[in-house]
Length: 451
Image 1 (tube, one colour):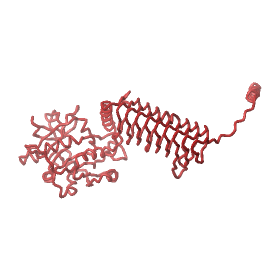
Image 2 (cartoon, rainbow, N blue to C red):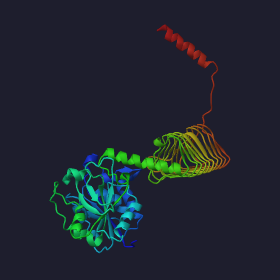
Image 3 (cartoon, rainbow, N blue to C red):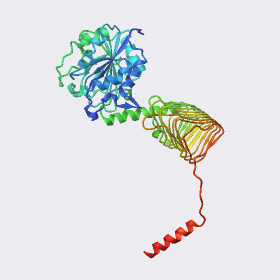
Image 4 (spheres, rainbow, N blue to C red):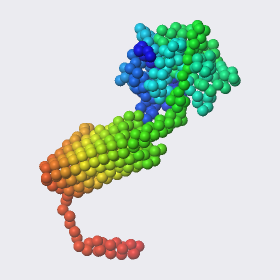
């Protein structure tokens, strides 16, 4: 097949009014990543020469989101249809000679393999002028229709608004995605008119314009789920649900056990090893890697965390960004960690906050322990040595270091370093007054009886 350069034009200029949101439509996340960036990542797998984002309403938000990805920006000031939008990319592709993919920022889950199929079809022996990506939805609704012969050669493409009843009965629909040679694209677009029901310049019209020149176009098909578009919150939720369902199936196929799969939510980049057990109602935010043999108990939330082999998390644990859990370590119920490293075999079993902390191998963190890492202005580190024992309800006021094998007595507030093997204790002496409680109750009961 072809080795010609590839460019992509991503249309992201629509207002997205049905989202009822101050956030631009294409920036609403699926699996923890903005829709537009899902698409950018997929295109990136094809090593494109350049990617052009056509922006309009809310352009500042879109430009900020794509800035780290070195996209070229084109501006569509007026919303005059998809053909008009693609035409705005002409200057951004000046000097480019190759194949152009036309994609939509609100159709986020198109796979790189499907894009490559489109490019490959463009260069088969019959050399179609354009390649259209079609699909057959359960309800064709108001989608534009593609009328093609048995070999996929397009005989007619027509928008739903302009279609006859017979044409609306066709089930093959136009996703809007296309592949076109750069030598053809803008010449064809220059001839597109707006004599239609909406008074807009339709991108699909280039198919029939090429046909008028004696050059046929072709359609290839993909699953409806892959080209599902997002125009409302309900559609966003539906695409998210479909993505999650596929990801859960993949996790189980790769050797993880999901006790209640429908309750587990993954991020776009979650890495799960073999023989991992995930109990109900676990949520993975972006940036989580879980090694083999880990158990994650129910109602835990992990984000930006790395969990080593054989560790146990939860239930009701929260691992925040920067958390590293060592081999065989335990982070138990109602424990929160942030920017914390737990060494091999370390334990924080319940009711603990570890922030900006380093916990040595086999150290034990008692219930109710907190690292006081923030003074209202700056963060400070706490270092707990290997084999140290931190008694329950202790407060470690950072910056502070607890040496290897040291013991911190329950209820202690540690404000200075504790050397290895030492005992730190700030507990006031206990006093006991024999019989006091009995006398107190007798007096109080007499007062109550007298009222």
